[in-house]
Length: 627
Image 1 (cartoon, helix red, strand yellow):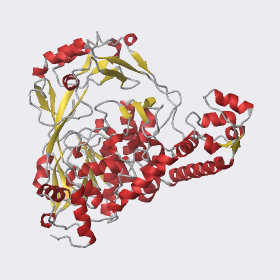
Image 2 (cartoon, helix red, strand yellow):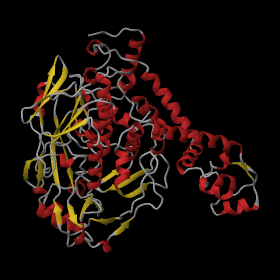
Image 3 (cartoon, one colour):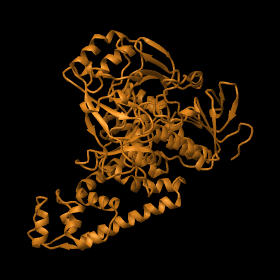
Image 4 (tube, one colour):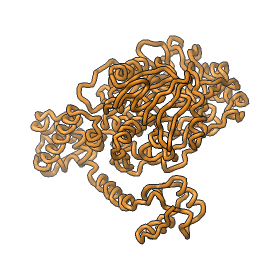
């Protein structure tokens, strides 16, 4: 692989969270990468809330780290608050959330990029793609400069033909203060790729010196810290609290009185907005029975007065936004630094890509992030990482990395995108996975580190840390099968504090199955266990594996059963139009998606179980018609 006279191995278009993961992964795997962005001062920008993680999203970040990506490492290095959500609930729904210093986050990510000699940064707008014989061969920027490469990864976020709305006013921009990207959508359409529109938005930013926090409820970080990266020696940093306030009837009255000034309600925005992160005006209309809605006040960094008003996305006029804000307890004198806005942009429905995130039409052309119809930094970063890995696999003529639904939330995310017609910005939720007890944030390393190591992104040091941890887990699982706790007065006196009692001696493994007994209790009653100094990440894994053993085995059985449909491979050249006894609608959907297996076909919306049965019989008899 060589770099000479604008010749690169991979061109990455866009330097948001997807583009950064894509460029870094390609470079670390030995490729010469051109990373083009509209503004190099906005690398890894957090244009919405300065936070990483939350339900399902925390699993994505841990999976990125396990595969050798960087989002977890950068978040751990720049957090200003760490909080475990749902900590009192089961492990499948626990979720780490980090409040980030967004400028530190950007600086840390940029340093990773600029310290890699394989990455060449360029501030330029890519306006055209060059393809020959159905394969990508290069790209052209706004200055007419041509770059050659055998792989291009598009991670354009909300920039493609982006249009910002504040009230009934609108102007071209992908993000506030940044120009829109023009030309690339038309180039994609000329290559036979379908383009649609989506909409998203962001809340206002307020000067914290104009906020009365005494009228709000404090939301502190955790005293016992958790981190995203599985690498050791994460930094301990000072934490900053968030705050909670609420809307009220006065807020809602102002919103209802100004709906005629909303571009969404006036029909000026054609793109569909995010279902799970609606604007405040959308919430007030859709949930009119609710007297109030939670609003979180989140700091944007240690060195700025700017705070983020979580839950207050809006596209109403700036003066109306100010009226609304000043009805909230604690924000009566708020000074707005940046108004809320909506942005409409072009995206490429991901049904046009394979599970590798490569275009079905143009070989060597990959897509990652919001251009695929997703919403969220974590979803974007996950796709960027997979696109980057597979761009290198494509160049090396190696097998593509296509993660399964049962292996990861990343696999679930990509399978949903390429199998289902996404009508609104896709957000990862735990409910989207049928295997969420297996896909916990705590065991992402056990699920994916081996894959990251084989792909070449997990180095020997991180791999050894992983191996040592797994050995320690297995060793402890074996030990607690034999070590017995006596039913002594001292033991029962301690257990009584937790509502437990022993009538007879019991092995640690049995005792751990009780709902009120965790490892801290075991260490309190058993001196030998305490003296072993078992690392927290080890004993937490042991505890989960013991307590949820029956449930885990049940989900593993479900994976095994669904795997039977995965084994039914569908030929690439099958002609669905010639298959009898299935509806025309089903034929159209199958022809559009071109599923690789019966399992994938069964997940396509509108495809009935009876259709799958017919396909199974034909495949078993080798009676499918070919194109």
